[in-house]
Length: 113
Length: 113
Image 1: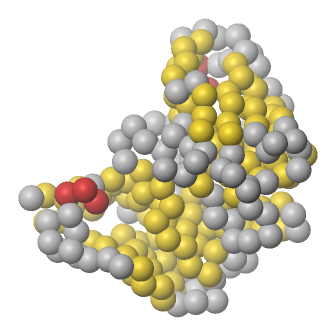
Image 2 (image 1 turned 90 degrees about the vertical axis):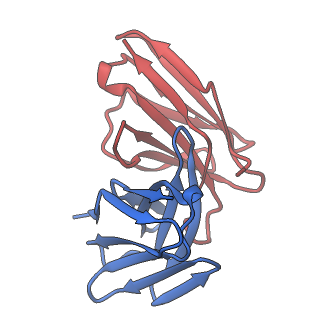
């Protein structure tokens, strides 16, 4: 186990709703990255947070937003959910300044109906 | 552009060696990674290699990097049924403080008894 935890494990929402996913990083890690993994695909980078600020963003619309807290835990918020947002959302923590060795949580599986 | 490619499927017999291949396009990658994902589980870091190395061995795992051809491989010696999983190749990309991983689609390894 990596020490990265995510909640909830599963979630069902309907189109147009909003969702918040949570991640606690591994002890000592100050950087959190979020990924979306659709079925049968590799992870797609959403964004990364370092010291409570967004530190890079992938090709995702503004309705995907995030936060990082002083204890380095993080949230991913998705507004106006669409059917295509159904995926496994993975959080990874790492320590800035070293190799970008990311340790992943088990993920939150989101289903949008 | 950023692109990581892998073959989608590999089937081997228990006890044989498995070789999973990956090609990438971004020559500025700092590190290259192999992750393992078992069904319904998050991503587990297996190993990584710094881009100025050409080989790394870790127990049953051997990583070979051909930087000229931008080719990375993962060899699993004495493959076991417990090695059945999806294996993702990823390259680490950095620009200042902006760091992210670019992922392949994954290679599904089936180990037959």
